[in-house]
Structures are given as C-alpha cells and as structure tokens.
Length: 271
Length: 271
Image (cartoon, rainbow over all chains, first blue to last red; front, side, top):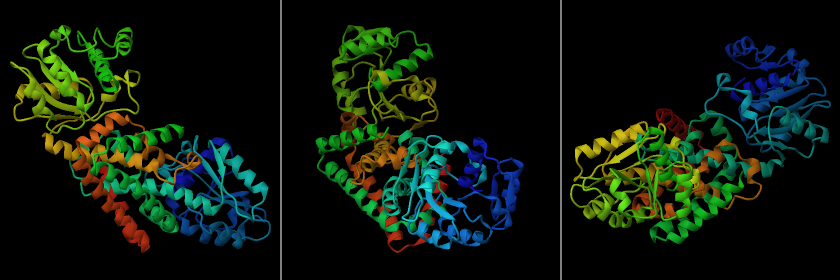
C-alpha cells in the first residue's frame, strides 16, 4: 500500500472493482487506506484472507516479491493470477513461477508511471492515465494471462501497451528510465551546486532534476538489479558528452548545431 | 519579434504600456505582430521611429546585439535605457556601452525563461510569470538603471530578481542552464535511442529531454560564447557519473543510496 500499490488500489476503485484487499506490514497505513475507502479489507501479511483474491498485484520492493509470494502461496486460489509492478525483471518471472502450485500463473509487467516521494499519501489513480504499460511475458505464460494483463492496463487508464521479453526489457529500461534518474541525481550533486543555485535556474534545470528526489532504497535495488545494462548506458551517454567536449574544445559551431538538430528531430518524434 | 521579443511585447501589453514598437528584419512577422495587436508600430530595422523609445530591449541572437545597437544609436533618445535578453554576457555590457553617446546607458540582464521552438507564434507573456530574472550590472551602470531593470522584471511578472556581475553570471549559467540543455541533447542522441524508445518512456525521460528541442543557431552561439565555463561543467558532471560508475561496478548499495539521499535533500531545497 505504498505509492504504487496505493495507486493501483485507487485505480481499481475508480474502475468499480468489487473487492479490493490491501496487504501491508504497516498497520497504520492499512487503517488509513481503509478509512479513506481505498481498500475494502486489510491484511497485515499473507493469510487466509488472500483466498478471496482472483488477482494479486505485488507492489513491493524488487527484493521482496519472492518472499511475499512464497508466504502467500498456501493461501491463494489454485488458479490465481499474480502480477507485479517491478521496474527490472531479470529472472524474477521464472523465480516466482517456480514457487507456484496448481494452475497459478505469474505474468510480469509494470506501468511506466511513478511520482517523486513514496507512500500511500502520494498515491493517486491518475498516475496511470495515458502512461505506457509494459507486459513482460515469459515462455511459460498462457496467452490468456498475457491478454488479461494487457486489457487490465487499458482498463486502469494506461495508453500504449507493449510486450517485450525480460532480457530486452531490462536493456531498454536501463536507457529510458534508469539513466535519466542517474543523470538527474548527478546534475544536482555536481560540485557546482550551492545555496544560491535556486536563483539562477529555469525550466531546464527544474526538469533535469525533477526525478532527483527518489526513494533511495527502492532505487538502489533497481539499479543494482540492472547494473550491467546501466553501466553500458552510462558509457553510451559518456560518448555523447565526449562529442560535446570535442565540439566545444575546438569551437565547432557546425558540430554543435548538428547535435542539436539531431536531438530536435528525435524529440519531436517522441510525441 | 521572435520567441523572447514577442513575449516581452505581450508582457508589456498586459502591463498596459502606452506604446510598443516592434523591430524585426522580417516584414511578415511584423505584420503578424501588428495584426495581433502585440505591437503598436513596426520598424524593419534601425530608423527615425526609434526616437520615440524610452527603453530598448534587444532580443536578438547574442552576436547581433552589437550590430543592432551600432545602427540604432544615431536615432535614439540621448537618455535612452537599453537592456538585453542574452543568456551569456561576456564583455557584451562594456562593448555595447562603448557604442553609446550622451547619457545613453546599457544595463544587461535576462529572464530565466524560455520555451522550446522559436518565433513570434511561440511567444507568450506567461513565460515571465514567477521566473527568476538576473540583473547583470557593470562598473559603469548607474543605480537608477539597476533599480529600473529590477522593478521592470517584477512588473512583467517575474519572481525573484538577483544581481550578479558578468563573470560570475556566465560561470553560474554554464551550470544552471547550458549544462542541462547539453545533457538533454546528449540523452536523446545516445546510440541506444531507436524508433521503439517512445513506448518505454515515462516522466523521467520526457522531462530529461524536454529542452532537447532548441534553436540550434541561437544555442550554438550561447554555448560557444561560454565554452570555457561549459567545459568545466561537463568535467564536474562527469565526476558525478564516475561516482555512479564506481558504485555500480562494485555493486555498492550504500554509495548509491548516499548519492540519492544527497540529491533528494538538494532537490527539496530548490523550492
């Protein structure tokens, strides 16, 4: 029932889902979620209450998904569908599926959505609106599960839904998500930052550092789970910085303009 | 009468200024500005029409300010106040002042405001609302001119107004403006970008590349006018990327979390 789990619950509520069970180890958060009618029932961990679930959405730290599923399996319906919201997949799909029994199935995926900060208080259904949703099927997945997650993504408000395998997923996300977060942190951590910086910034610095305020525990997990890919992206990015360094060193206006023209075309194409 | 000049004219209109004279070499743009009542009079270059101006705001490419002022001086009031909107100052203040006669005075400054794209069509008074405005006094400036520009900035809607000398200004702007623009261009120009990238992006990539679509001619001027400082900022930024590379290489969760905690504190402090 954190930022992402809370947002799922609110989106499910908006969708008119009959029964939403919130699971969290923090009783205070569960009471809050119930008082705000975000959830119908509260569970402080795996237990018999999970028997009622047709679908389980794991929105926990990447390292905790396996532990939670392991503890939940004895209580789950024999044909339950489990999905997650983890930004890096690695061997998670196979690892989770291996824990399951009967006709239980795990189908991996996640929205390309988030917010600064953390916790139920920051959650909102609107984070899904128009966001990309990535479905990450594994060899063991049924077409039914893949289709279900794709249509679920649309139902909670997401825009484009794409499918990609786990290896390719993690490689792409290193560029489109991990790298921009690292750059934002690096930009604001520069030795040039000081207490007067704020009087000299405009939109470019504001936007470039927006995601510099992220949950360090969640994100160190994500970065480490994908570190080989992220290191490659840092190298590819550094090659671009080297283009800048060279063009500036020799005062090459043509080269600078060429980089900016290339970027402008790509940026327009994004939308 | 481009993006910035047009925005000044619209902000002056909003403020209720009596007479706004637009100057541009492009007759079509001038007609447009007049039809839209953005300006009251149009001049296709320096000429007797400038005699009416109490204040002149030069919103041209950095390299063109001197040429325009040189051609305008014979027509200007003997106590005219001239200011600019140039993002990099260098020796511009002294160079312009040297061209002036009588009690004419040049006071440098600019808003920390802008938009993607270029041209009158993209201009709007609202770009100033709440933006920082930097006043860059030189040794020759009168306190009257400095005070005038500061209160003018507030009148057109800007928030915080700060004063800093030209050398310090350019050093700071290399970090707070030039660097974020270079990073945005570098991020989208990475070899990892391809036609499917758009399906895997979220807010972090969107924000990190927002200013990747900029006017290449204007910005190559700005970057080259400030290249020593920008090169230093690229070096300082690369040191941060090196921290990332080292932490990821040895899978140091503590180091990653420390960088993110440091960034989160700074980011919160910006607002």
